Image (cartoon, rainbow, N blue to C red; front, top):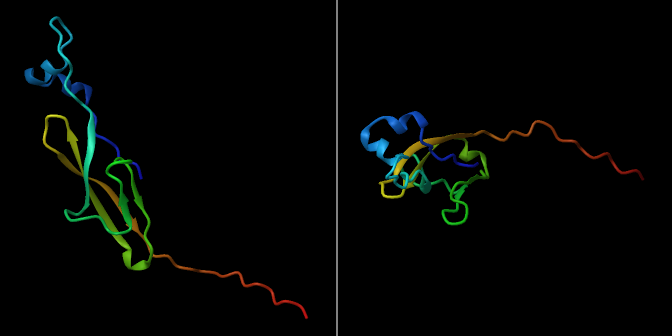
Length: 116
């Protein structure tokens, strides 16, 4: 599952004088405010991730893999993701909800009996 990153709403760029200064285009112009975010933490309900949820914070920080192995893991999960913006403290959102459902086998195709 790929984690989305927050983005700046264009209308909010003119909300206040301090914000407007980040997006100044007139002379003298300034480098715009940094909008790039990185995923800095991924936890389930304020603790840790379940063992069947993998997050590689170095190689693929915007992806979590969900691979439950048995029905004891069946329930709804809410994952909080912290995003870090340069020169700012991390911002945490509960952005990922997923449910692991029971695996129920409803039918087997039995092989035919071998002939004599």
